[in-house]
Length: 271
Length: 274
Image (cartoon, rainbow over all chains, first blue to last red; front, side, top):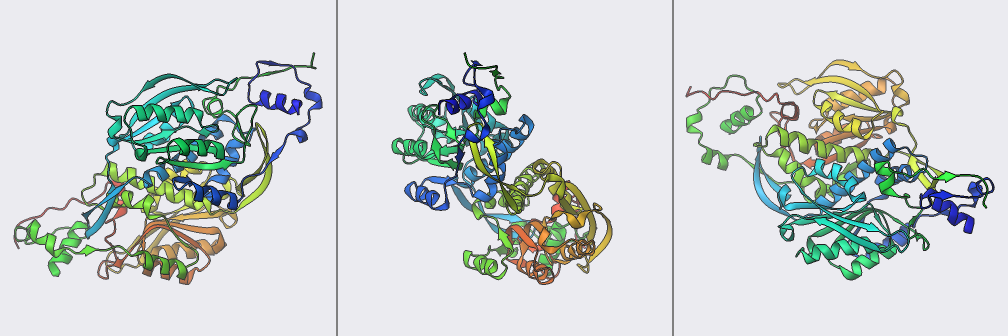
């Protein structure tokens, strides 16, 4: 058990220099995590009306590649971008629309268009990992404004620290799409949402996008902000207590996407 | 009625030199004379989906805004292309979601998990474009499946007879072993699509390995293609209610997709009275 924790710690680059009994830890000792089944997911969706989980057929291939420890940076980014695009399209499809009548080359038709201009939509990224969403975000909504909130999770306590924010002056009038790849304890997201609330943003105008989440995180957010919307690509079964990482999870998304994985030293035997 | 047809033909760039009684056709009159097309209701769409098990129609929430911008006659080319690309991307993701997957066990940084991945590598997937309009799909197609092979079939529709005419093809040698994603933005009569599918079948491609992607279609086209090729899959963004008999254009439609995407819309002069 302790060996497993050490091994996981090494994989997550949580330790700088590690003296691990590497030779005696074989792969088979790591647990095999099973995803939530359709029933569990349906219960979750019934419990939280404002929760959307993207259809499995779209996401399982992509997520499998992202989760795979062997996946290199290029493939990781490419697949993350694909998945992020899917999430963003889903977020946009849920934004309020209004009707008018417009003219095609052949005649008139009922036009159903998003009620807001590009500029009335604000992507708020929870730095650093949330920035990964901006590339695809701007491809889909090229005129959107971008807000940034820097929150770093203290690795020892798992509590978030607020460091910095830069938001549009009129953010309370905007449709906000808040982004962070992982939703684990929900502490960072909660902090960001409180900051938005302080700026006058209404809950109903916030959609939170996340790649992988877990039940605990979802519950925490909805308890404090019941009227916001959450869209996630998949809900993982476990939140590991010791590290507050999702399992099977993706590892450290920011490190993997931005290529800042620390190469840990795996030296000889334990002293 | 004739004025409407003439005006339609004008908008579609079908008539080269047009002598129209333009000064008499004022805009406010033509507003009343041009038709207002209503989209199919949820019921009608359900009937269609029940009739054709291999048909998928994208969720209206995702497509109506984008399609509205594309349909609008005034939309400039930059906006048209951007929205076409967005919609094509959504269609491509749906096609990939329907490809066969296989299970394995893989390792994440924290442990093992059940991996369900598409059974085929990029190279085993072939995007076959029905030139010229189909080429619009290649942009986004290659972003999603960067290692896919590309096949091309040139079929042009004779504007007068609406019959498809075959000109040219270039397909990978081993196409009979590949998963095919056949692409053409519009599905009107179904003539061109059907011809392309016959060509693919001549090469030994099995129907079950073909997914046909189209932005806007109509019931007649869908019926024709499924009748001749019942085991293919079709994914469309929206089904338009009408196929205009005289021109075989969809209504409300998008106009001529190829001209609008590639910027080759003919500018016609409106001269004086006849």
